Structures are given as C-alpha cells and as structure tokens.
Image (cartoon, rainbow, N blue to C red):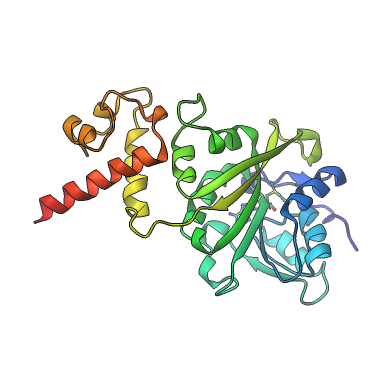
Length: 268
Ligand code: SAM
C-alpha cells in the first residue's frame, strides 16, 4: 500500500500540512476513540494519516476531500466498503445527507485557512452531532475555550460556547507535519449542548454577537447602538457600559431576546 501520494506537492490554497508522526497520529486517534458502528466523518483526509488509523479501529468512515488528486488516490487506497469518499468542499456539504437519522462523529486536522468558517457551518448540524475532534491552530483553540473576561475571549468563543462544551486536549508541535506550519497546533473536543427550544434563533444570536464585537474595546452602548438603546440593554440585565469581551453566552442570549422582542413590537 502506498504510504503517500508520490509527487504530490502540498497545496497552500487547501491548507495542506500533512501529519507524519505516528506518535501524534496515535494520540489524536485515541482521543477520537473510533468504534465499529460509529458514523465517523473526516474533513480533509489528505494523505490518510488519520484515515488509516480510524478505519483500522472502526472498519469504516466517510470523508470529504476537496483536492481532486488526493480524492482519486484515496479511493484506491482502501478495501471496498471501508471509505465513503465525498469529493467536495466541506463548507458546501449537505450534512443532513450524511448518515441520515444517525448521530455524527466529525473529526479532522482542519485546513487552517478556513477553520472558523467550517466551525460556524457545523453549528447548523450540531443537534445531530455526538462529538467533534479537530486539530486547529493553538491560538484558535485558545479562543474557542476562553472564558469571558479573558484576553482571548471574542466572537468565536461567544458563538461556539452557545452550542458546545469544549475541551482543549493537547498541543501538537510543528514538526509533526509536512510541511511544518509556522505555529503550534492543538486538539479540541467539542460536545454539543442540549438545545433550548425556547432560545432565540441562531441568526439573531449571531447578529448580536457580531455587532457587540464589531467595535472591539468599545462599550456595548456604542457597539449595539443601531440595534438596542442603552435603556434596552439595561432592561435586558446587561450594563450598557460593559464591553463585549466580558459578556457570557447568557448575557448575549438576553440581548438577542431583547432585540427579538423589540422587532416584534415594532412589527405590530
Ligand atoms: N488529515 C490529513 C492529515 O492530518 O495529514 C490532512 C490535513 S490538511 C491540514 C487539510 C486537508 O483538508 C487537506 O487534505 C486539504 O486538501 C483538505 N481541504 C482543504 N480545504 C477543504 C475543504 N474546503 N473541504 C474539504 N477538504 C478540504
């Protein structure tokens, strides 16, 4: 079996940094803990560093790969029935069509250039997800798990913490990859939280979070000026003088609810 695709040059536009170190590959796959019968979906299998080990443990996975050459090579790499390969852009994938009616276990060493868009796109499918394990830039993982008030707490933290419990598992050094990236990576586990049926829509929550962080280090009164007045912010139980970096998910939820109610009252 070919270990690598001969002559393939890592493509920067696809964020290709391939894992090459059995120690780190083993640690990541142990964290995923693939089991036969799981619906495992890998984003960006690349040269199959994780794919091989996951299939060895589970017998099967589905993978989505954008690089046509790698996709063609991957198709010939496994026994029939071991790998369902979808040649597509993970950002445009119809996740509902994957393992219909079953819980998904999504994982990958994500292309760093599009890691935030992928994380945001997966929010819509999170009610069907059992867990997600991703390798990302350490700086991104630090932002994902950061509590309010922390230097690294920002839009990504407030967006993802509404939907997931997240644990940073361990760092992976640049030398574990070919080519070596400039930065350290980290592995994160994401477990979807139960959805509150009475919660405001994903769109309004995202709108309020984006507006709140649009003027970093400005007060909410300034940042949210177009959406809510100082009195309306106060009535939602949040100080208009506060800065977005200090607000919990619950506070953003309260502001989003205030916005929904304001729009409803203006519509009648
Ligand atoms: N999993 C392999 C590993 O750990 O060595 C490869 C990881 S590499 C960082 C990212 C992989 O994602 C590459 O194979 C790349 O071609 C693929 N990729 C990049 N953008 C993608 C997209 N939009 N949709 C699906 N795959 C993508």
